[in-house]
Image (cartoon, rainbow, N blue to C red; front, side, top):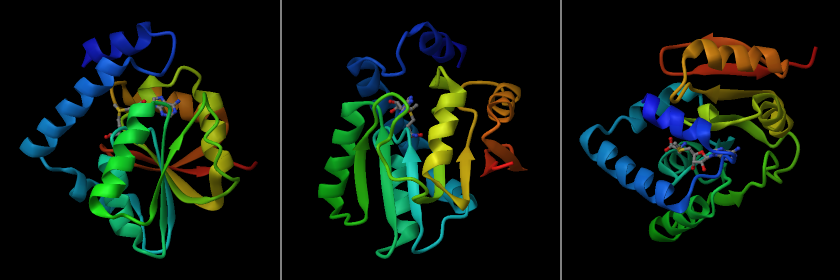
Length: 190
Ligand SMILES: C[S@@+](CC[C@H](N)C(=O)[O-])C[C@H]1O[C@@H](n2cnc3c(N)ncnc32)[C@H](O)[C@@H]1O
């Protein structure tokens, strides 16, 4: 765990090298085979049919495909990542499973290029620990979230105290629920 954290901290950019992305993808396949926990986990995110969900830092789209099932055909999922291989992997899943309600989006820096207030739920799973400028990142997440929407974010490879401090110091979000697994936040407009 600290090996991953050290590796991420040493990097200048949040975009990981291609070999790292491929290795991570392989590891995810293994983890999902040995311990298939995602379906159970996403039930607690508050995602409902018809919603628009943004999977921010989607990686190969393990969560995006689950979100697509939960929002149904009247909903929409935007799978956003800074890595081209992530966008490619999500597009492959879209083709393979004939998914009509997911769009893969390549972000540039902290700009997702999504319209303002588009999302009912933004999920940032296993990725916040990679973000070098949390306040700028959280501002972008707030920009794309509806006033009534929420952010589901987890710690990844960092202590909960760091996650919470970064969220609260940004001034963009209020924490409204905390579990062992994740934090739920509402946009702060005060
Ligand atoms: C450890 S992976 C997790 C992927 C996915 N959320 C999951 O849990 O299966 C982290 C992902 O976040 C992406 N990422 C890191 N910083 C990002 C940023 N600033 N904007 C968008 N994506 C980012 C990485 O490229 C990588 O694909």
